[in-house]
Length: 482
Image (cartoon, rainbow, N blue to C red):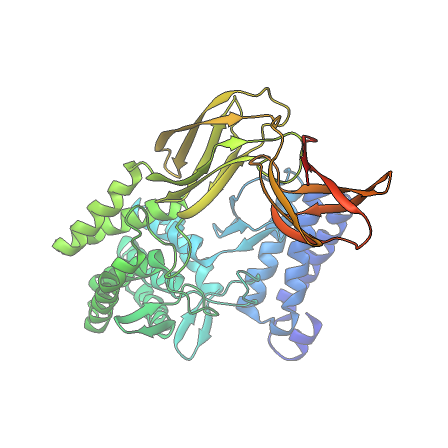
């Protein structure tokens, strides 16, 4: 803080407030227990990490956030889920444990949109002013930064999606308050959004994170809608063209985000969590209603139908006969291999056991360990429940638990000094072989140890082999005269 003041980046008044914020946070942190202390320490750590970058807008966002953290964790338990907390000026801070409550531009612009839509003039004016005080002027326009590391990106970073929503929110605030001056920050937010894009074969795609080239579907759809709203409110033909280009790129790439049963969060990545798939459905609905385009209407209907579509489960292979005792590493567990159309929680239900496994679409194998259960046939089912709660239940062939009581079937012979054998035993992974050799009136046991089901062994010159004893892993034995 002192260096920022010396460099002329911070006023003495701001510096005094921020030093007091740190002193208070440290004093409170010393007496807090567990996760409350951890989160407040995380907020202090993130504030310290950005020390070389302190200037008026950044320091305000960072240290006002530290004050909110100190106030919140001094009187509240650490939440077990993500929450938003508002400061006195209406600014939104979102929990990113263990980093505490962090200034979140997208959440703030969403809140500004909500205030404007509800015609809450006081809240709209207060939040708009507070966000303008935290705006960072750059060559492209005005940006709002995130001050915590996320997804492999180091702070500070920006978001093209957040910038697009900022343009929309300030334009709506301008209309709600009858204040044309707010169209200027809306315009500057829009210009910064156009700089946070990457080129694709289909057209421009918004960068959800400035540090990533990942193509995220919900970000593109939201950016297209927000910029179109800004274009309408501001009368900007350039913004209208840009929104159309975003829409064209999105509709061209949409089939690559469609698994046939769900949506992908990002191109080439995993299936979207339920909240993001539902979010995409709502965005497609808005695009369909705004454009009256059959392409968007079809996409909306298709993605919406996935919310009620049960997962498709198809068995590919089963191992339904098992020999769990002894535990010899061979056929100890029953298993089913299946294909799955969408991310689901899948349970192999046998004998009252049904451990759940959440797996993505594709090929998977689940197994069941019978332990010391009695030998008999056990009914089996495969139950899959997708992220939206749709369930498919599939009956499987019964699983048969057996005990290996049959001795190995053995064929063996000796030619010269070479012993060969061929054994069949479906319940064992290995055999133990012993050759009984006769030397005069004495019989000697020659241990060959563990061997495969087919093989040969060169016997020593002395003695005549008279018996081969073959034992399986369950202890069943067969003796063959040689």
